[in-house]
Length: 395
Image (cartoon, rainbow, N blue to C red; front, side, top):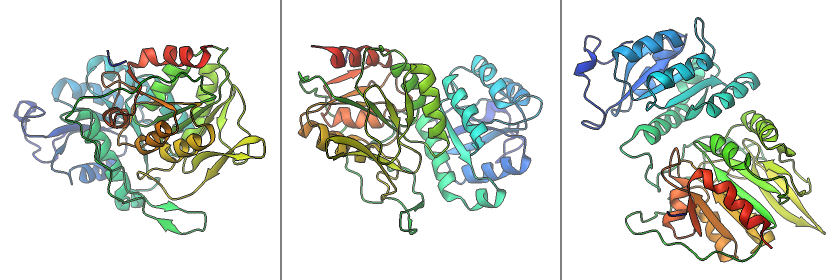
């Protein structure tokens, strides 16, 4: 191995809705206790002709009943609802429709971030953070675009979106207070029609391990890092595409899963053996040499690949500091963040491995490095932890 209502035609019955793929329509169920929010979601989603909201319900129990009446391709599930909340409904919906992906939706609070991370560990495929007011939701084009891209990535003709597909254009606040709309430079195209060529394995024992991930990443991180032995002492740096608050909770969850010190990166901290560092939401994380120390830098420099944090700046900095002594793992995620950084890594003699397509929620990021010929191994998720163990502890 490459190691309910139908908002467009309310009177239609489920049998009149064409099956997914015959006309490109993706059938969405919205589950939120606010009818106003569901209406705004419906208008936002149905601005795209490939999406159709076929069920709109106010709690988890109603969602379970709707699954019996409607053909559903994807579910957008709110967290806080009466009768049956999202976390309670999640396993029941999965049992009733195991092939239907679920995206959690919540406002950005610490409590909701904690619940969303639990939902991801329990099988939700992704999450979105709702704008905090209806006026923000009405005007938040970036939220609409983010949700549409995520739906298509999870339920499109292939779970692997075009590798040159850009991320979500957003506005970011820079260190000088100015606003940036994101990096809109053309994406480098990767030829996905040819065979995948693997690079030779390096013989170097890495001094540091770096991981890049996005959609499906939290689940993959728990699986990979939870299986690493306590004898592994290399620091691990993670860039996971997540907003602030979510990255704080992610670090706390990883600390519990791995029984290792794990924290959001703080500017100026020395990189310590045995520690796990998570790039904080809305900041890039890099490493530089300061005297005899290797220190973390956390900065609001411009977004890359429409992301902040992004994996590319992390990987470039690590390649410059560690050279051949760097092991990179690219896990499941949309887009191709990490590919250009991985090019720099292999140019400096470091090694890159990727999660395989079958075990990825979305094979965008790992597929990009694979088809670019940058990987020394392409592995199923359950095998990645043991691979890291073997490479990091070999003599």
